[in-house]
Structures are given as structure tokens and as C-alpha cells.
Image (tube, rainbow, N blue to C red):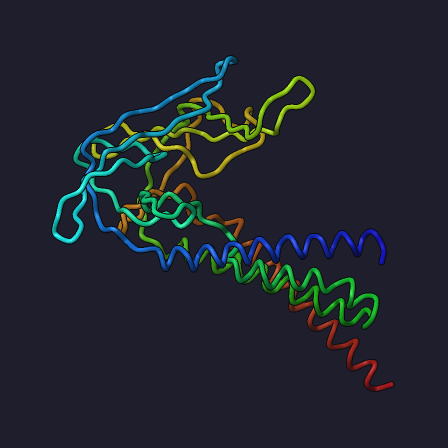
Length: 275
């Protein structure tokens, strides 16, 4: 097995593991018990900067009141989004930390569904075996299937985003948070990720939220840069990304190329059969 084939197997395995992990997380989220609505009693903004002036912590300590079995209870919960006194929040069990409660809706939305990642990972991992044992026509068939699955996933993601009833909210980058796991040493510095802190206005009040998406380059996130948020009218959830034309264009191109591949693969099989 050549280095290229090993590389393909590794990529396929990574995608397979990523998809499986995402699928398991989705199952845990469905099983997570909803605690219902809570009301914010107090909110405290926590910020911390490093010695170079970079923002390294930015979150809100909330004191929330909720009802359990007819009794009112209070609890503390941290949030990356800003809430004010009297705001209603949706509480749910934290699937990553047992016996913890978090605010629902702070998850990042993935473009590719876990099922699509699993299928693509299996197809990529199967390419070296098909090339080595079965021949060119099987490789062509696998590549065609891979393009079709990836393209269909992009189209479905676009349609899902397009069908949402949303309203646009103009916003801007107010701060940039630097996240650097591990300990910085003289000879080694862990790779850093940068998250924009977005400032927007709702019901005449100014609010802030930490983005769910990051960049490995700080220069891409200029303070004061205008961005667009999307509020889901049905759920009230704030979304950072709406339907993008690149998704539907890329998805349609992939599906089209997959049909070309299927046609050429069929010709290869028919040619071998007629010999």
C-alpha cells in the first residue's frame, strides 16, 4: 500500500470518527431532558485579558429562576450570550457534563449531517482497496457515489436554511477572544483560535454574543467589521449563517459530476461485459 493510499484511509477514518461522534452527540441531545423555561434574575459580565492585552475570557454568569415539580428554584449557569434581567431562557441538561444544566441553543450548526460524514468516510477509506483489488471502474463508481452524497448533503443544508423564516439583524465585531489551550512555554506555543464577540441590537437594547465559529488568523476578524445575523422567527434563535448561494451551486455541481461519473462507470461495465 502506497503513501497516497494510507493517506486516503486516514482521511476516511477521521471523517468516519467525526461523523460517528456527531451522531452520538445528536442522540444524547435528543435524550437530554428539557428543564423548561427559566427567567434571568441577575447577570454578571466576566472578562479577562492576558499580559499582552488579548481577551481570553468573555462570558456571563446568570442567576436563573425556574420551576420544578411546582416549586421555584434558582441556579447559576454560564452563557456565552448576553442576557438581561427578566429575559426568558430555555434550560436543558448538558450532555457533555452530567448533572449540569445549560442554556439551550448555544450549539454550532454543522453544514454536513453526521450521516453524510459517515458515508463519505467509508467511501474514501474504501478507495485504496477498490483500486488495488477491483480495478478502475469500481474506483470510478466510488468517486461518483462520494460526489453524489457530498453534493446532496450541501443541497439539503441549503434547502433547510432557505425554508427557515428569518429576519436579518445588522451587527458588528466588538471584540476578538483568543482561545489557546495548553500552557505557553519558551520553546512552544499552542495554536490559538480566535472567536469574534458580536455586538447587535434587539428591541432597542444593545447585546453581545460570542460567535460559534472561529478563525486561526486574528487579522481576518477586524474590530468594527459589519456582519449579519439571522433571527429564526419561529424559535427566536439567533443564527450566524443564512442560506449561501455557494452551497447550492457547489452541491449541484457535485451531483452533476456524479451523474457523469455514473454514466462513464456504466460504460466501463458494459464494455467489459460485451468483450
